[in-house]
Amino acid sequence: MSDVEILVKALEQLKPETNIFKDYIYPIVAPFFATLLGAWAGYHASVRKQKRDYEVDRLVALNRILLQAESCFSNLESIKENYRRDIDSSPLRGISFGPLVLDFEKASTDVSKLIFLTKTLSKTTRDIDETRLAFNNLPRLKQILHNYNQVLAIWHQRNVEVKPIFDALREHAVAGVVEGDVEELFKVVDRENIALVCHLSEKAIKLTDDGLKEFLGLMQELPDLARPCFQKKFLTEEGGIVSYLNDPNIIGQIISRVPDLDSQASIRVFGADLSAK
Image (cartoon, rainbow, N blue to C red; front, side, top):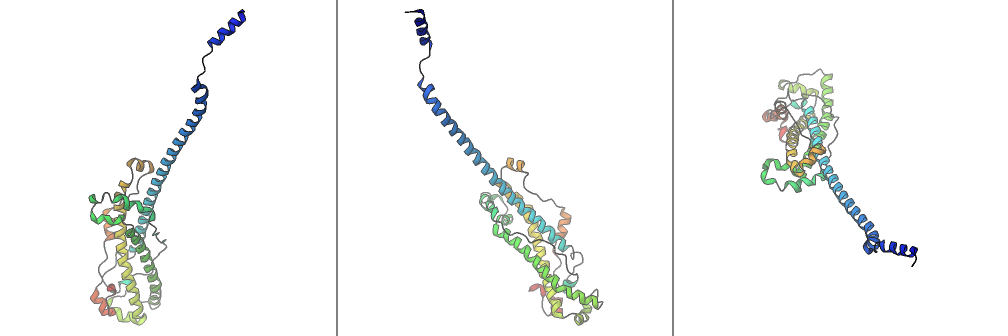
């Protein structure tokens, strides 16, 4: 055997034996497992994102209803500021102030995205004062918003009916009407027209007081009721739930109900208790 043949044989002996897994199986399996692992990671990332997006949507829906409640409360407050300081129990108080500025948008009554409140809060109702449970009742929330739209409609109708009365009073220079001037007043404006305006006013005043109380309760109570629906870390990262701060002295004056109408005086003037209709 020549030296070359001996060298070739020695080199062949140094060559590692064939590894079936390494040379054949691994090149085929490795890409498959890499693809599978990537798909698994992508799936779980997608699931986490969807869950996060769902939580964000719930928080947005909750904050939207709270911001709308604050807007409705402020609008009712601005309406009440027109009469709350001077209103008394007179049956003619409904014409003691003129048409109001009512450039307010109607409230959306769609509360379908808050369905999570009823499902989650049912687990903690034992620890919640019964008087606060109404604000996780979606029909109740919808009714509060519907009532707000209704009171705006009544105030608007009152504006329509009271304008001709004030035009007539200005034309006849009749101002500062008191009970002693009732008959003179009825010579200028029909009793029925004044009765209609006073009736609309009484209804609007009552619903305004009711709405202020309802919206204040919603703004104050709903954030505490809804907070257990979210993880603390999530709320911290996303900015949290809208909260409402108020001065108790000022708010107390705003939600304080106006004096009751003098029903006996109303019967004497109009033949009926206008607040009872």
